[in-house]
Image 1 (tube, rainbow, N blue to C red):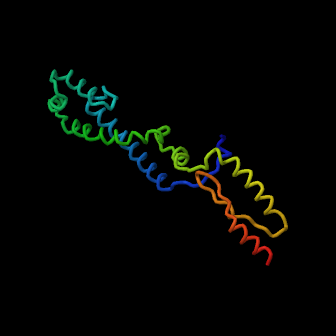
Image 2 (image 1 turned 90 degrees about the horizontal axis):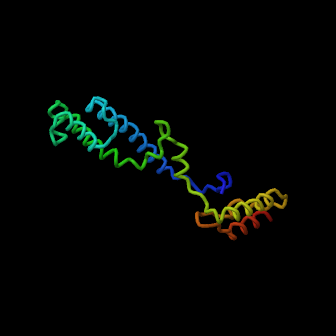
Image 3 (image 1 turned 30 degrees about the vertical axis):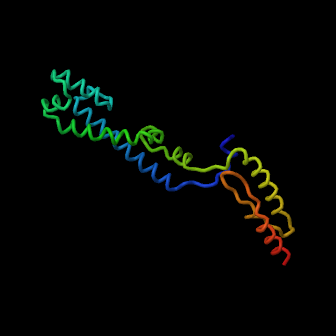
Length: 171
């Protein structure tokens, strides 16, 4: 179904806030990891993969242990930093989808945090809404504004609210 015909039920503001915050955290973490790996390997390794980093360092020293190789270059602090950052980076990888050109893609976050009426009910809802609008435009005094409740699983016509509006219109 076209986006224009989808009926919005609500936007989960907490999800928008959390996803935005986590995506910003991921972007800054990516930059920190890139810089740290570049400094540790003199720009020779661009992957955030410990096996690749260890292989590079071990080839330089002949050792079989990446940490020992880093110690030989007096870069064990950088090595430890990269080792501690990679699990954090891995834990945030689900937020990569919200990055566009190195920045937070707020449109995608909002879209993913929006709840829509199910497609099978949308056409019925739009048809009912068209009739409600037509009735509301009549000079009969009837106003059906809150008589239809909408939830993700369907539409519910609240006859009691409709009746109370009719009674009020007769007064």
